[in-house]
Image 1 (cartoon, rainbow, N blue to C red):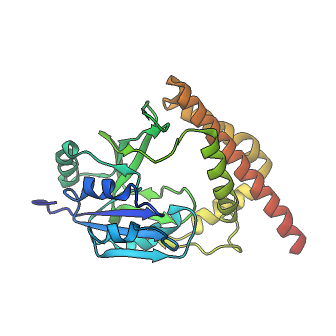
Image 2 (spheres, helix red, strand yellow):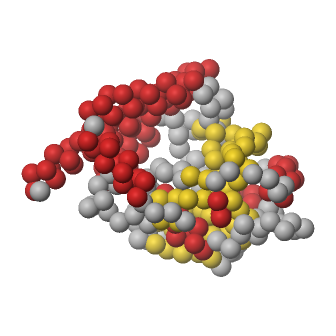
Image 3 (spheres, helix red, strand yellow):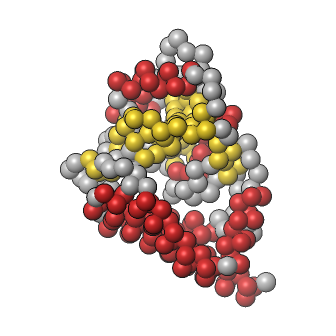
Length: 277
């Protein structure tokens, strides 16, 4: 990136991505000022070798199984004013660089930008209103507690840009098999973060106090959250535009099942802990 006082650090959390990471890195090398790559656990392919062609900020951390649990470490390595948070199976288009540069150069209250996103069914991209991702934010404005799937809180305003963050994994991202696999992997881990005695919260420009209080409230009223919150999230996503396509309805349903399963796991952990208290 050139001729801009505002610097961008790209942060990627990866896991054995040799087949697709080059596409991602090539797509952003002309936009960002630095690239930070964090590998989730031992690398078993050439991901690290490829990453080192683009940056010397390549790190390997203990396997967590979910990218969110490496964000604080990654943010702390960044020297840019802005952070562009991407996955290895995503990429940007050069035609959008000028708009991104213009937006981050404007000195106003907008500290986070949302891009259009897309799902991939193994053969074609699926786009519809409501599928989007907040992936560019001002580092100094971000307050983040490392919890699975957390998005953090950002001071100031958030603005939606008509830019596509292309998303092309090597598998069908909207199949029921994919969601079952991810749910089985993520839900048990996610549920432990409702219990301060079971985990250690890593924080960036924040403390975990607000989350701990919220988690305590959920545990206290777990039956209410088990029944109401997944449905509330489902209806909220429908309202945001996912109703326009069959795929959108499927995504809302998958999300409903995920959070129902999550609160069910929280309930089961709470029961086990009560027996030991």
